[in-house]
Length: 152
Image 1 (cartoon, rainbow, N blue to C red):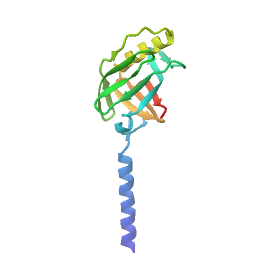
Image 2: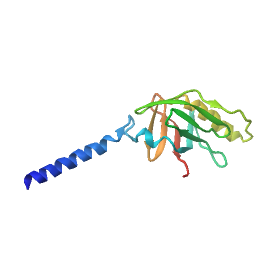
Image 3: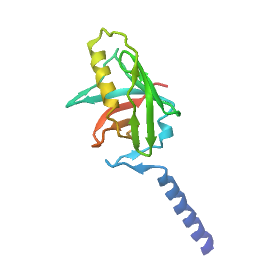
Image 4: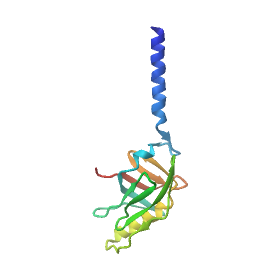
């Protein structure tokens, strides 16, 4: 009976370690999810940092991002559509210069969001998921872009 109990406790301990191994702590103490939880879904922009300013889109202005499994990111930057490549390994993330359509946007806010977002993407050095939000950080660990899961 003692051996069965000991084996059961050992099995539980191994299961707990395996479960914890699926997450990893980031430099800011948050837990990051597996990258596969990021890809294949649309993310809605919550805010983007440009210099010392943080901009958040207000309806009807929205901005999105979708990271595909094949190393491409695409979405709407507030007015124009964009796409580009990315590389990801662990918590590291790099986004290449984005290609963007060039329609003129009447809404000044849309242009501000778009300019800030396209500038912030090239600063991205790492990622994590905090409170269900995808947070993209610069080389200093400062959040430069924050996305929330899009509407299903």
